[in-house]
Image (tube, rainbow, N blue to C red):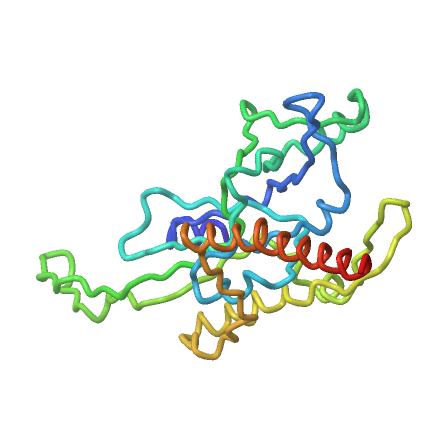
Length: 264
């Protein structure tokens, strides 16, 4: 499958890599602690503007066993690739590795069970994509002339049809077992509570099917977000005066009036 993706689309799913969402150790720069919960239930919903993921930006989606997806800088003619979901570049505590045994050995034998990436050995630093969508425009080559050894080729015989494809590096997070299994959450006291499964994950597949078949208008809009209203400098000054000066003055004045009335 990867051979087809590379040749026809310029895309490669690095299935031999695993995304490691660790936790930085503030007391030991460059070293990280493993979080079992983040490995199994990584919250990541910074979807792009593509119709597949945009409605899911405010949904509760959780991921496990993510693999990075690489896009060739020199894409085949007519192919356009758009990221759907990516590990942000400022996630310095997250990387992708294929050194699974070394990582386990670091965890078992390292001081404090700390791990660290080794970029010299091929580990991938953020940012990188974990889901992409691609389109290929149709094209028709010019008709060739016959030669002594080869017949003429009509345009229709080599016409490249338009196509779409979606590559998701999150297969385990889309299985029935993952989508129906309650998520364990541990509080500060160490007690565990089971909360709802990440059912919104399935919408990635549903939306992908609609997009692949050209039915983007069937994709649900998702929950509406609150519209942020920026307050101007003058308005901020007025509000600050009201809440910091006027209202406290009114309270003091009311208190003074009560004291005067009691003395009478």
